[in-house]
Amino acid sequence: MHEHCGVFGVYAHNIDIARLIFFALFALQHRGQESAGIAVTDSNGIKVHTGMGLASHVFTENDLAQ
Image (cartoon, rainbow, N blue to C red; front, side, top):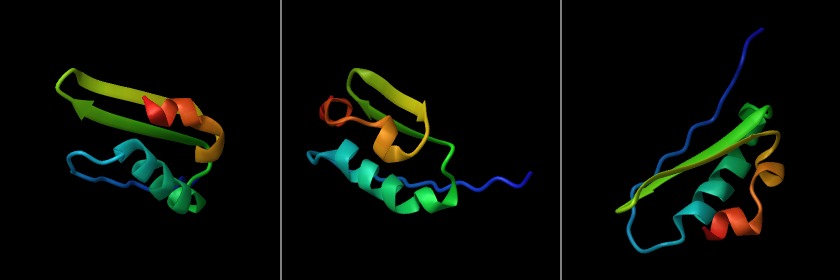
């Protein structure tokens, strides 16, 4: 089996980074549709949210707001 994936990275301050990453993953999901994940860091550490399926199914509005 040959797997594909899409990777997106961004470095920024004071913007809605999770929403930006979500839309980037949404645009890249044709590369791999089995799972999606977002990892962000702030002064409190790293937060990770992953799940099986399309980005639109893995991340809720509440997930992106956190």
